[in-house]
Image (cartoon, rainbow, N blue to C red; front, side, top):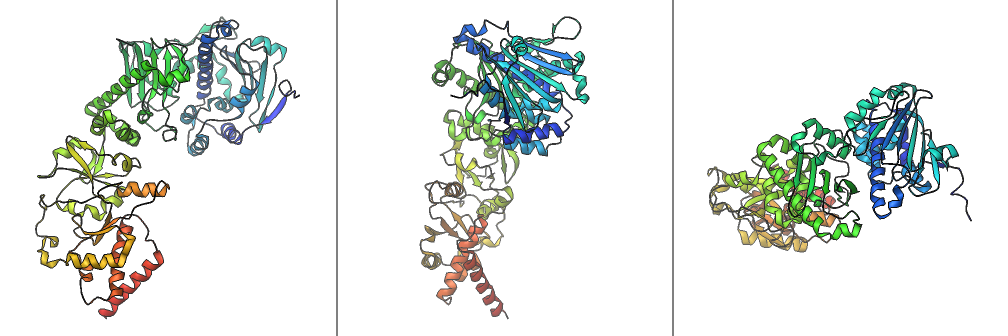
Length: 628
């Protein structure tokens, strides 16, 4: 039988916590005010959890009084205390919550914090706000009693290698009948936080909209409430200023940037709910986590339910904010959240509203919309293959870099299409520079045909569907046959427009190359894409595009099929293959060179780099000798 639950014990911090505390203790950030915002935010969360748990167990609210947060400054002995009568923590919860960082992204946070000139803007985003208190405190003592429990526990640390956990003293246990008391023993340089006006300033700036009363308990005078304690999203837009929205965003999102878009409205009718959503102007750290979870908080009649209710589709997960329903039951379980038809209706309606607001912003404030697209375009484009119902609207929102310029819309593309052009052409790759030099663009460029240059990882996936915009299908220049015969070239005097007799014999060349390459390619064809390059690789007309196929092969999600080698019959290297005087060795070398240079231009390595180098050296030497 173990006695660990009643014994005092010293424990080491998790490695990441120790590293984080070292940064906090030995770094000086300009915005040390953040520590109080984070402690108040944690207290508010504890009160929210108590209200939610008390729905099923009303007895939890019996001891401890009405929910509130108290701040107690004492100049003797230089302590600042933050107290809440929320859900509280038991022994194990104190260890888990204050000794470890379970949230993913911790390593990323530490890296960013180390690199940042001022890490204050990162702290709230990463859920490590409690540790910010070590920026201003030499030591911290936390006493907590979980609601309904007879036991209170004390956690203490000086920010070193570890912490101590022990049963609370009789005096401390008597003070904390429910909830958590955090006592900060302030550093000498942080003594300003004992001044009432400093505390009021911070609460006014960061925490005014916390829904629970925040009381300042001065050393002299009566306790007084120093926040408005109102649910901002329940107020009408006419009552709120731009500054109100900025503060609400920073409080809800735990961020320091400004929102690039604000959506605030009340829905009435079959369902009644308030919505306040924000699009950040910079990327949250967890944007590309595999779970793709949203960060919209669900309230029911101003009672916090969860921050993980799947209230928007994953491709809108960058949004932050609150949805507060008047109609949902308060006792929503996780299963009910997943299957509740009312919640599904809210999700559908709010998603439509968000996309409508993005569309309106793109039209009326293009510079503001550009901020959102630059930061979150790759995420929004996930909806192109996930949300069939809204695909056309999302395509109209999308902005592209093309051969004609940046931030182009598909509407602009269609308007600029050439006579007899019936398709929207695109090319997928890993960089704009490499795409612009890709030989597959040559024939389109010669005709002035605009091409979408797609470089986000998601582009290889959404383009794999049979998509069209305004009745114009999207067509890859890396897949299937291309025929530009009906679209005239811009300059008819170029060498590539010479009569066909200047070109190599198609049947002869293809037969020679197929014989040399065997099963390394699925087919060899004369190209309609090329004007100056000798060859390129494309995918067949069915199956995945070249770029998607390569991505899947790299991820071991399937074996890559053999590509089609397209050759330019007007190129001298290809013409050389038709020369009946060429011996088999020369024909083999030239055929492999056509394949391998096409691979290199596609960003791939030849299958056998050493053989490629030897082959190239032989051909170069023959040329040198022939002209010697």
